[in-house]
Length: 386
Image (cartoon, rainbow, N blue to C red; front, side, top):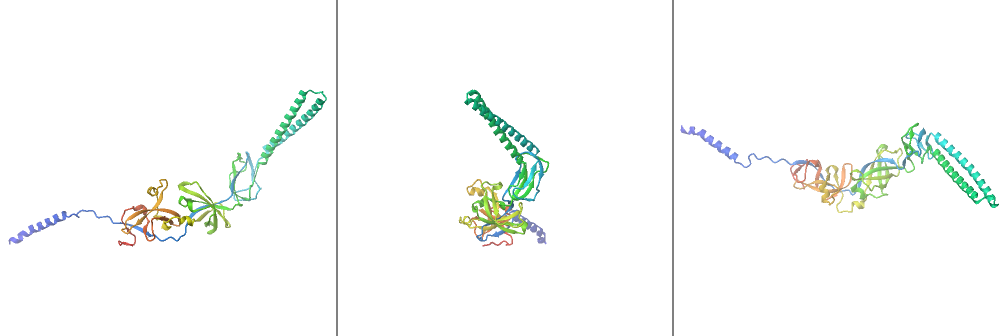
């Protein structure tokens, strides 16, 4: 019976060898590689050749102004309210004119007095001149009479100018409409004292119609020209549409390097009012859009990454930032591709760059991945694509 006594020792020996073999394995304890990040992808399609960008804007009257009195005073009457219409020449507001009437009366009396003195001095000079011819009056007396006549003429001229100024001030106590239009804002009330040039009413005119003001990014400035025709849509008027002519393209940028654009509404629809919102569809210059070898390609706006300074440095422009997308290679790794954004609207953008139809880019969530990272495609499993 010696063999059964050796079995426990053999089992212990085999267990020890197994433990040693497991401990010496090079893969023991090695961390597992993280799985590739799943991304939503977009397959680039060929562009349709259209170069249209859609922006938001606001309607305003083409001719508008702020009205004020040229003289100070207390408002006696305001004849219009906000929204009311008026005709050219209508009296819109009046100042209390009592003081200005008194000043005009005073200047009128001073003129009458100056004219009386002038008549007296003129007769005196004629008398002295007649006596001087006969030798009864010395030359000195004649010269004194001539000087007194000149002084009287100057005083009459001064009194006449003072009266004209007083009458002008009196006429300025009424504020007349400079054109046919309506009141957009009332900035003063009756019995309120206002200073010279202090705004009282803001008015808009019907003569020049309406304009739509919007702004465009710097990348689109070269694709627009004054006098070109575009389209505006008015949501508040049941999606009414009108052609619009580009009247002004700003030369100085606003914030974020956006340039102001003003379009004249060619056929204003009924009910259009200043302050309404508008959707602007700008038709870009096809010659400018086709002036480079790279075609325009549509991509989701969520695929664009803005503000990376490396884009600007790669283009040799340290002062401007450009956009880029993340292309998915056949090896399912990400690479960064700089693009120029030509137009944007309705969730999509038209870009040009080193991209081709059929290639894949990260469609959304670009802020969570980086160039060089390995990914897998949402809805495509682990297989590769061509």
